Image (cartoon, rainbow over all chains, first blue to last red; front, side, top):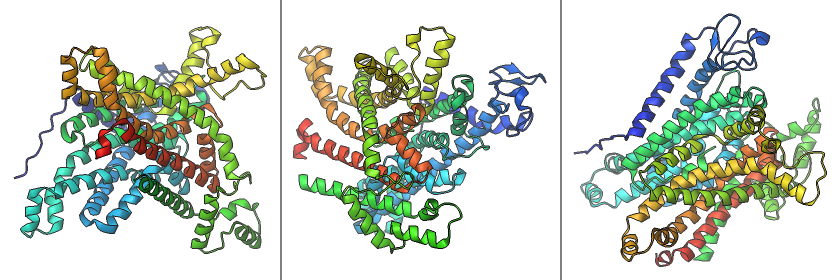
Length: 292
Length: 325
């Protein structure tokens, strides 16, 4: 019988989950209901750089003001959130998936394959992730797919190391050895016994990875190597407000607030899950290196 | 043991260098095509390719590049034709100063904050600091930098703060002014407040989060109870026993936070226009100046590997229990 851990989040994490859900709903729905196309550039001179809560000459209220092309900042921010959230979640889940695959293969096969894979992981971990990201992003055509691929390519190592240690730890347990002795095929031992035990740390790493991936995507986009305008992302919106920071600070500040709220919520949920699921096995150490 | 560890680190470095080489060579496009003027003939391109050795077989290119690199010859920049090693050496002191100052502040602020939180676990101070550190931790460095620039320029002007509060937002020195002695130092310090402060704040937030859980783990151990039962003051408990026990973890953390400092300095140098390694790397990446990109990656990775090795070697000195293990 498999015992499923009951996951009860603490109060902070429940609030965070609520905030995150609200952010997702807002990002999906707001651009739908918005008047006008958030990417279209209209009456630039009449509409540009309206401060927050200002109404334009047609009486349309702009909750967070407008950017330099007179586009509504709030609607664009929510549209950008779709991209940033999707990149963060997909990038993190795929990276954790690849890490789980590599880690379990390394532990399961052992021998030279294990040594080669772990040497590669260690080598990639020795290059600061942002540098690795920038190099990869610069080598290929910038855009959504590149960002996700690069996030996955540079994000699997930590999870792989952890899963490998988990699987190796489980493999020495008597119940696994008796399963092997009973003649259970090794892939089945891996699937039924080793991996479920490694699931907790993997989930925690994925959750904490979402925040990191969003931060890294925004960093890449800020530096011009991520999501390319006119498609908005939080990072390139902040970049767009960079030279206006002294005259119209809201253009750069607003998308950053959305970003901080999202990453904060994801981090708090990850922290809470870590306390409950993973104990000491996932430390905060790698986070330090991963953030943008 | 020592030789083995150094050997492992050297091997790791070799793999990193090879991975970098492979990555750069996987790049689409011909570096020679970047170098020749637009509309150059095919023979012109071929001549440049031969000059750069790009027409040789890949293993030969790799061996030549590796051999040159081991002699500290990182090649010449495609953009400026200057030796990459010189460019890196020029930029390194700026980043080194930025990194050292912010790392020191990071630990001087982060560790005591984490200890304070663990000592008051669950209380108002702990919860307040947890929110604050997680908030700073969740904010991207470049956005914090921009927000603070707005605060100290736009904000300071709007609020009518005295001129001394308006911090310079860009560069290391005030351009066009020859300052002597003390005034020059003050000028550099005023320019450093925001970049160093931001890197230190972001770093300290991460360290505090980590130190808090490390201290909390130590606090419920037997020897702490013994120390308290002996009548040791809280000050002695924290200053002696707790600190001594989290020190090894903090040293490891010091090495592990280096990549974060690198990442942070790339953004900070970019926002504040500091002529350091980060900005050099970024500009090289944007200009596809591959020799500079490779050189910078090699330098960064070497720093990370050396820091990890140093932490690993320092551990037994700080924690005698590890000697036996």
